[in-house]
Amino acid sequence: MDDHPLFVRGLELLLPLSTDNRAEVVGSTGDASAAAAMVSRCMPDLALVDLHMPAPGGIRAVAAIRRTTPRVRVVAMSGSTDPAPALDALRAGAEGYLPKTSEPEELLPPLLAILDGWAVLPADLLRAVLRPSRAAPVDLDDEERRLLRAIAAGRNTVDIAEELHVSERTVKRMTATLLRKLRVSTRAEAAAVAGHAGLLGE
Image (tube, rainbow, N blue to C red; front, side, top):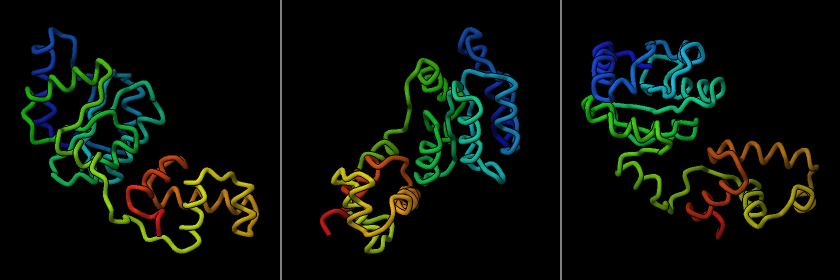
């Protein structure tokens, strides 16, 4: 899914020739809102998604494709050097990320690797993903910090409810809000993010 016709045309010409017809472009659209429906209709092995498509944008397209056709491998692309959109795409379900600045022929080895089941990231983005940060990326209030410390300690919902003097339902609601704030999907990920950001020792 890309809103640059020349880039798409380059892939259409190059892929069959360079892969002995193993890979070809079966569909394209510059409309992020139509991406998931097109992928569902064409059922490709791999979907390339430009993160800078017009609203609702590439991140939403990645998430929609992952929801509707989970077996399709999704690769995010961007011409920006900012790692944040790439990380958002990975969280949304992309298996890889490639810089849009690459020439089409430079994309072939990583694309074929992704088709073979690998996840592919540029080295600088991989370093950004793995680099621990001591800076807290999210501003948490005292109650949220208490909840996070309890989660990191492995406390269950009942115990946390007793400690915070709230209902179990409230703990579940607070936990869901906290996970969204930390941009993670599980308690284990929340504890890991908090540990890297230095939130647990405060």
